[in-house]
Image (cartoon, rainbow, N blue to C red; front, side, top):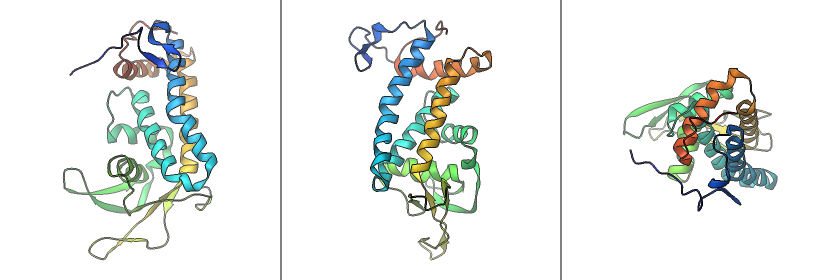
Length: 227
């Protein structure tokens, strides 16, 4: 597989900070650079959107899905995005997403075969993440809500029949509130950074997984990088 390396004197790790200005053997400095970069990409923009109100919920959900996708790869040490990585991360960090739907949702998978969405994590990935990023919209079995319409829940099945299958059968509609989901993911991100920076050896394996993804994405070998 083709890989890439940065030209340190010409490439910025973030605004005002060149690659050559980073002490790459100092893992704490690398983690802080990563923290700054992810904050710039995926925290500052949704924070602004969140303040703008529910009318911006679509954009907030899009950025939230991108943040989950990003964190899942670093957290689990994966160099590429996959549905399994996305959902495994949610299962471990925000367990309510692993809850079974009262009734599965039927859909056609990317191979053109009939399949079912069985958990809220399934719906978030296939309907919201892939729907927004690949199809530019959320399928009709999904909907955005806000202003605490779900009474403090991040997601739920709409009690009304809002969607039907082509053959006329009732189809469940899952509503999700990005104004609650995003803050939950942001909290996970903050805790993740704290875990990476602690000297507790219990988090050594997590740091190694972080190194795997960081090296693949930013082109720097962190094998000898230590706290």
